[in-house]
Image 1 (tube, one colour):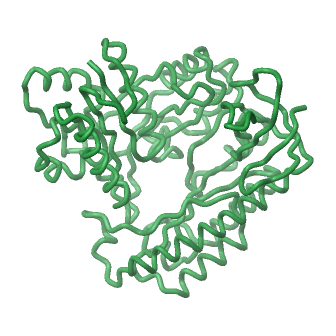
Image 2 (cartoon, rainbow, N blue to C red; image 1 turned 90 degrees about the vertical axis):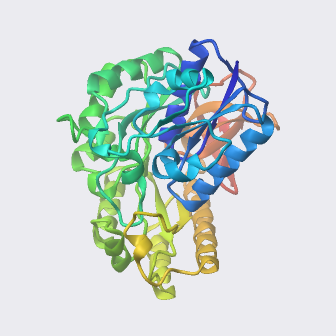
Image 3 (cartoon, helix red, strand yellow; image 1 turned 180 degrees about the vertical axis):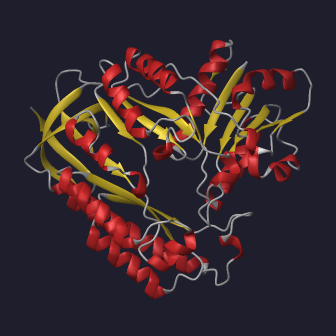
Length: 429
């Protein structure tokens, strides 16, 4: 039978989708692109924003149009938090929540035999870490490695603690085993991923610093280690010192900001101030020259006035980032922020998103320009239509260059010559 996996959302979902693909292939199923007619469609869903939820519903409908007789499976966050709504959809044959993903294959095979199953556990107190091992990624050069799940922070706008459950981490020995296998199968870079990656080890008497150090010491032939995202309060001096002393750690830190005003940060339950954020960023830059720092920002949070937004805009512009991910605030059921008064008009949120994205584009261009006439190490991912090899630096910006040799999935030193929009072009050394 043919199957397809449709992935929405975060890097953790990307990891989990690879696990589903490999599990079904190993069981004899044939993987096809989501645009093709398949017998089984697995929609790995997202619920973090209203847009993500809408996209999940759209992809369910698209799968049904591709093959009205296909088995449609919805797995993940949206299945966990919107179970009743999805049960009303006659197109869906199987729902799998956030703590039954390891059972996906046997659940599918039971449904194929005619059984009706809703595999969603609402009592999240007993959620354990599920080891969804991945032996390789279709994107061979870089592999996402999930090491942590769940979140206990309960930011006032965020549905993730309800969708993913409590914080839990994979045992250190198992992480090392998975990382070693990924490197043996040809992956040059590993991206440590989790719902709250900086809290790795909180339930197993370990830490992110210990995890990183152990990977660097025990995973031979790994050439680059990257953290997908880390909260500002979890960027410890020990982690900074480790990054400073080991060139294999990527010189890029994605550190969510969410707002540049203390009033809004407090309402969001973010647990830090703009002063604390600014001081830590300055400290990181002092210790790690040329470091790339990116951030998430939410605009249009309830009660965000025009003056509040301008304060956020000015804070971001003055502090400077290599790029931003910008999201309009989405009211989510069960969250504290959903009940707040003074919700911001949708058109106002849209305008604020556009303004910050324009600033992000300028900052990204200006940041990459600082590397002109300097060498950068590029992990080559492939070629573009014009014959340029392309890949990403340690600082996570794209570089393109020409080469007569086949350099795919290799690290190549490139001198940056120019920047076109947000892409650097250079000459291989």
